Each structure stands twice: as structure tokens, then as C-alpha cells.
Length: 298
Image 1 (cartoon, rainbow, N blue to C red):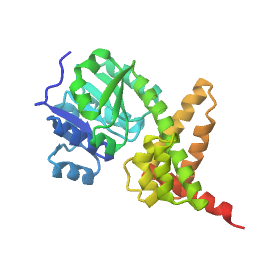
Image 2 (image 1 turned 120 degrees about the horizontal axis):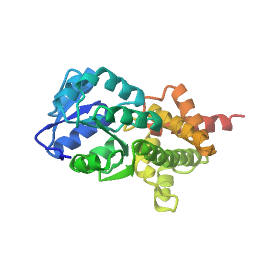
Image 3 (image 1 turned 90 degrees about the vertical axis):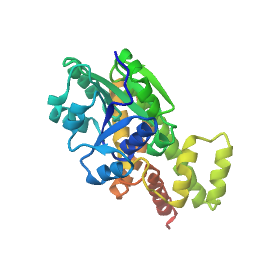
Image 4 (image 1 turned 180 degrees about the vertical axis):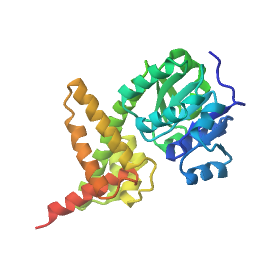
């Protein structure tokens, strides 16, 4: 199987927060990128940063042998494959970075394999800011030879890429890592909210936690956002709620009680109902602050 050539365009369908970060990383690594998004604002941002865009996903699929998908869920992935299916061809590699349901992910891989198209579920551990800085990790399920053939491309997306096994395991690994990451973030939010409620200096509280055994990287990435209530999105709250629901479904299928994730889902659902879904996922602290305020009322 041939490795990718930097002079040939890499297709990128989805130019939102994460897709825009992918485009920047790929261009920095010397790849030519042909992007596409239904949002004209995202297309314009890509072009302003030196990228090239196509009018449709089908055009990207037709022109590129390697195509990265960066979409909200497996439903949008299925729609892109269905509408652009006529452009798919034997030997083409689809690299899907979407955090989706592992079962439809594996089913799509089988469907595409029947047509000679190789599908890798290449999920990302890290938000868009971490992708831009090269701190993300890529977890790839699917054909091992295709993983090797795409090594240079995957190396451009993150600091390290792991082959996790057959199709669907990249999606599973992402949900497992996101479970721990999300609970770290929720624990940080609750700790900061409690510190504020009992009169501790918020900045000092964060500094002490960073130096203590309680430390997690969530403090570096989300701590200041929570303290300053500055929630411009690196990763949107509603997207993580979607992931948590998928985690709970996997746990149900495995017969595993997931009490902490169930509580996390309730907090995120309250945040989404309060209109915080489009904000950064660190905005869940606003719900915890609200609950604290209610608890203090006589």
C-alpha cells in the first residue's frame, strides 16, 4: 500500500473547530489541503489562512485519495458517504476523526471494504487548541497496513498515533479516554465551585491544586476558563454530552454500572438546558455554581 505524497491534496470534510485545527497542522507539515464545509464562514476562514476549499464533499472525495472527516457525529458521516458515494473508489482511504458510536463505525468500515475503500476510525484525544499545538493523541482502528501507509499524515495531527485494533476500536478508545477526561473536568469544576462558596481565594485554590496530588491536565487547559468565566469554545459542551451518552450506552451493553458518568450526564444536560451547549465544555461550572447558590438560600 502506497504512503501518502505531500504534493497530492489531502481532503478535509468539516472545517469547524477541530477541522480548522487539522487544516493548520497539515499545512504546517507541508501537505496540500482541499477542504469543505457547509458553513460558508468556516470555508472563508480556511481560505483566509491559505487553504483551498471545494464546493461539495463529493468533489473532495473525487479529487483526493486520502480524505479526513471531522464531523459532529456518525450520522453526518453516514450522510456524507451516502451523498458522495459515487466518488468513492478502490484504494481510497477515509480517515474519520469523528467521535461516533462504535457499532455504526464498524458497520461503515465493512460496507466500504466491500467497495474497496479503506476506512480508519482515527479519533482524537485533545481539543482543537491541543491539536493546533501538537499535543493531541490519535487513536486509530482499522486496517494495520493502512495505518502504516498514513503514518506521516497521522503524525501531523498529533504527538503520537496508536493503532488500537480492528474497525470500531478507535471510537471505543476515544470514549474511554473522554470518560476520564470529562470526569477530571467535572471534578475540577466542582472543587473550584466549592472553594468559591466557602470563601477561598479562587486563584489560590487553583494554584494549590496544581501543585498537589489532585493535579490533572484539566487544570491547565480549563482552570483559567472556569475562574474567569471565559467560555469561548475549544470543545463545545453539547459535543461532550453526546459523547457521555455514547459512553453510557456502551456501559449498558457491557453490563457495567457507570454511576459517575450518569451524574456527569445530568450536569451536562442541565447546562445544555440553560443555553450553555455551544460554549466550551468548561462552562459546566456555571451549573455547579448555580446549585451552590441555591443550596445557600434560606
